[in-house]
Image (cartoon, rainbow, N blue to C red):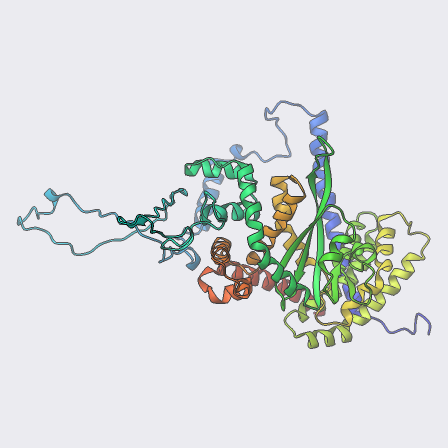
Length: 542
């Protein structure tokens, strides 16, 4: 069949046209920005440094306008200006009823409570109530536990006393013998691993509350608490690896090494994220990017791991090809072609047009079941992937595409793991990319910008235990403080009902600890994305 006899792919041409149009618009915007920067730099280099105003015929002379013209424009502007209306508070800004109230009684003085006309006292006929939210900084307080001893006055042999930890009200600390209670431990965990505050800032926070707690003491508290939390995290890990699909991603962290005074080593934090059937985030820490870390963590896993190219060649396979299969992330491939846009905009636009079609299909398949999603992929995505592979092969054999160019690297990157890139076409449960795992890993990378490094291997292991506890709770939009505090109290009391402490189960039994604004924010973000893609598809069809 000659090229003239081949059927015309109208949808593919439309996607290519859209991508080229968008590329031209982006380049035009970039050109205008560069022109503006060029003018600015020229003025900086060759223009006058004085800020005195220089008359320029090309500028409008506002204050040279005639009086009548200025007055007329002012009247016209006044007429066009809409009247300001008082903005009503949306429902989300209403003051919650559960907050405690401190009532301020504001009544007129006694001398003004008598009517000046008839002299009779004036009763209260109504009350105007206004509310405003205020804040009292956190305050430390001390549990002074007095365990009284009782003894027989005659034989002086029998002594009775309430055992430590059995006081009325239950335990006051998660670690026996500790000087600090549950609230202090919870504050350290939430502050560092949820609010991204390094421990030295925790020193200032506790100092404002009335007591200085050194950072090394805070780390020691976390290290003593890690064994208590570990059984819950181990259950989370076992549930995670019992699924058939999970996402894997890693990021670097600097680690102090006593054998290298004044220098740092590069260690790794790994995130293993389960799908919706096992909705947990579990972190791991290794001193390198070698195979040993993932091999140990995934020793019981059988299924597909969504990874980047490293995971295919040197990571999650780990010699267990019959047990762990890789599914590569298309977002990484697409990102390579976005990076190639400045050097070869037309070829990059062609590749991005294929991905525009693939992601439009995934957008429509988001709310479908795994079976329906797989059916849609087979009917529409397979043909696009076939065309994309043919295009990649053509570009790979094109002598004009240099191997070391950004486009050549993007083409080679895609072809080197094409088999793993096609896996999502055969399984409806496997996502097209690993973006959700990358987003969850960002919780750690945001904190890393503040605390900068870990002090030792032990510090990394403690950190991943606490991150696993906090990140899974945040994923379910829970009040992290309430969740961590409740888990610590149950674990310290000897409870082994770890299932009830899993964040998805805990959410069902504690609806008051759910952050509804996070649920609404997530739904609104997804809806906005879907509406944008729907409008784009409708415009293309029209």
